[in-house]
Amino acid sequence: METIKINPRSKAGKALEAILQILAGQPGVEIMENKSPYNPEFVKKIKRAEKRGDFIEVNPKDVWASIK
Image (cartoon, rainbow, N blue to C red; front, side, top):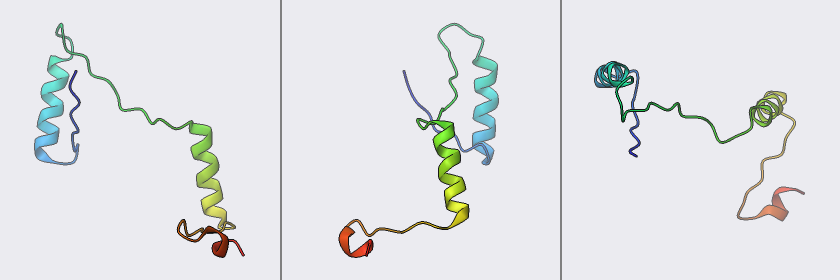
């Protein structure tokens, strides 16, 4: 199985997507959507927290100094 990344905004990406859609019904060709490995509810929570802005940024090299 091969993985191909396509930029759908580029001219070549659009052409390749069109070709793949034509081949999609052929035996041996399966087009799979790229799914996020993250739980959608978790992503919503993170985005809501980001908008609120009441969070602390932590420097991973000096955690204890960051949280004081």
